[in-house]
Amino acid sequence: MEQIIANGLYLGAQYALIALGLTLIFSLMNVLNFAHGQMYVFGGFVTYTVVVQLGLPFIVGLFASAVVLAVMGAAIEKFLFAPVVRRSKRDESTMLLAAGVAFFLDAVILLFFGEKQRGVPKIVNGVFNWDMRIIMPYDRILIGVLAILLIVVFIAFMNYSKTGRAMRALAQDKMAAQLMGVNVARYSMIGFALGAMLAGLVGGLLVTITGVNLGMGGPTSIKAFLMIMIGGAGVISGAIAGGFILGMMESVGLTVLSAYGDITYLVIFASLMVFLAVRPQGLMGKPWG
Image (cartoon, rainbow, N blue to C red; front, side):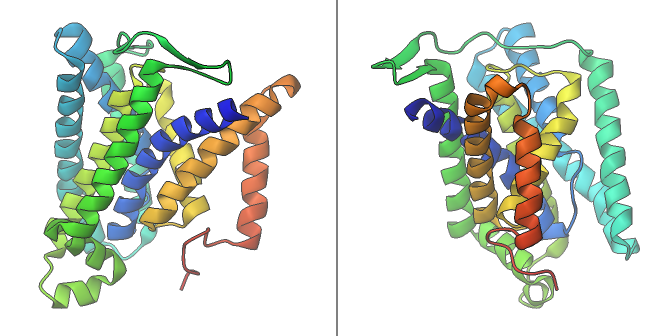
């Protein structure tokens, strides 16, 4: 049981960080960013390039991933999503654009990095062993702790900084925030950049554990959508809760259901469908409309 909980917390921390970026973009712009998984993969490849090919320290690679994805997110919002949101009144337009961005990033990743699995050497060696109850490599513990620290920093930023409070106001009521002097265009761009940066940071963290490859973008986006559906679309606390719930479900499923083959996600999806039939707005979301 202790091992299941430890694995669930480790998975939940990284999943929550991925979901935070996606739900931030959705809450500010009402845009489902289907390219979120590709941004995660791109961040992993940036860290791989800096650490393995340039020979720089891991922390430099992680910082580079954050910067590159933040700039990418800001550019995508300013030159693609903002004009479409401004000129089109149909939600399908932004959904098609997001899908197009996802395919474009897949093509860019294939062009520059190829389709092979890439990884970064372990940043910490050794294995933690607590009386054979919890066995976990130190690098996973470090990545989990860093993910939790980043979540805490993000929450503090959203609660106590001027920019964070402006984005929260924008997410709650765009018209009222605009009347109070909030620059909608500026903070939408900042929010998209921050969401992309979070995806890049998770990719940079996990390239040391699981590595990255071209095919990881789509499944990562699906997991991110699962988490915000569980917690409630556009709700930051719901994204965190959804991340840890999915992490625990995956940990329990991979442990308990391993004897029955690879049916863990079949059970998770079935459970999610039942849950959404009962509470379609998620745990912390408000009913649509």
